[in-house]
Length: 109
Image 1 (cartoon, rainbow, N blue to C red):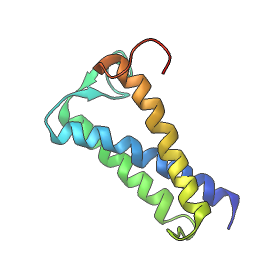
Image 2 (image 1 turned 135 degrees about the horizontal axis):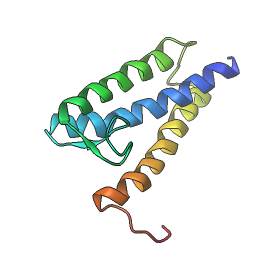
Image 3 (image 1 turned 90 degrees about the vertical axis):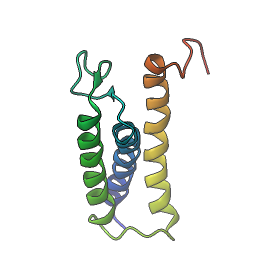
Image 4 (image 1 turned 135 degrees about the vertical axis):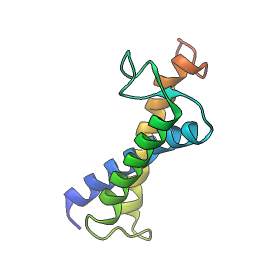
């Protein structure tokens, strides 16, 4: 296995995790923060834009995980790289979006 494959799986995990809140918010017909809103990352975008943004994240995440190298669910290194990417972004998003959606106080965890 090459190191660049693990980096690809890490960022694949990041994008797959990022797809979830956007797709789910959009499917529920709710607006949510996107990079396209004003102010960027704070304002809300339409449910349709969230579905499109989430789907793009899914497609790129798929490419990074399934089309780079030979991802193997039985390989600890592969799954760990994907999981760490997903976990890292998930914790960041919980703190970032929690400020806007009532899920995180301003104090320490």
